[in-house]
Each structure stands twice: as C-alpha cells, then as structure tokens.
View 1 (cartoon, one colour):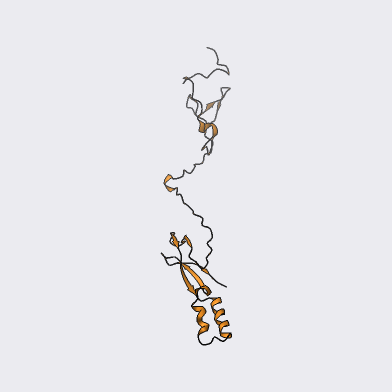
View 2: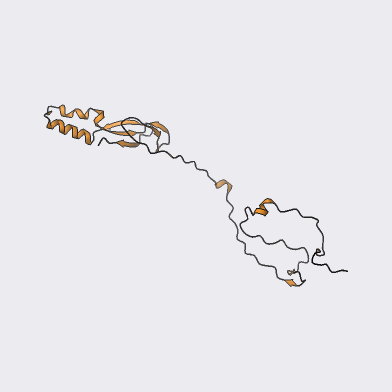
Length: 161
C-alpha cells in the first residue's frame, strides 16, 4: 500500500464532486455568527486527525442564538405629514387631528381685543347711546374659532390683534 501524498484525498468513502456554495454562503447573507466546520468522516473517537496524522482536540466555538423576528409581529404604520394650517377668517379644508377625517372647519366668532378697542374708541367719540356696541355685531372685527363639524374639537383660532 502506498501512503497518500498531500495532494491525494484521505482514505474513506468518496462522495463524488460537491456542489459549489450557494449565493447566501458566498456573500454571507444572514450570517450572524460563524458556523463551525462540518465534522470530518472517520472514527468518532472525539479526536480529530491533523495533517501530520496526530490527534488533536476539536476547536470549541462560542455560538450565540440569534433572535428570529416574528413574522406576525411586524406592523406597518403609515404616517401622513400634514403641512401647518394657517387659520384666517374663512373656513379651511384640512384633516382633523382628533377624528382623522377630511373636513371643512366651522367658524365661530368671539369678541376679541379689536372688538373691545373699537367699542372703547366709539365711546370716546361720543357714541354712548348704544352705537358703541356695533363692533360686537360685525364679524370682521371679532376673533374666529375653527371647529371640526364631526367631533366639535377646537382646531385653531384666528386673532385679529
């Protein structure tokens, strides 16, 4: 019998040509930790045989389990970014942040600083007989509150002064 050289395969069953590595193995996709080499065929004495034929202990590998994401726990959240809304004295079409519906705001007029200043200035001019209360009837002199018609939430206020 001849002793095999370094270029010859070790004695044992020949499995024939092996398949080339897959794409994932080549580029190491999803390879989170090193995998230990496959055990060599041969006697199962617990010792591996080196190139020189002497026995050596198998290398010990520390492997850590990789958490596998749960396919059912993946949630997709759609985020809509809305530009800041400027409130003036006319209704605004927008998405209500309370009920998340597209609405046109309802307006409510309230006495503000301009209304009271107009009333005071009319009093100083001599309109004491009730004419000084006219600014409380004019919507163009009052502050405007914008409400959602669905959920009645206050969405914004336009102040004249």
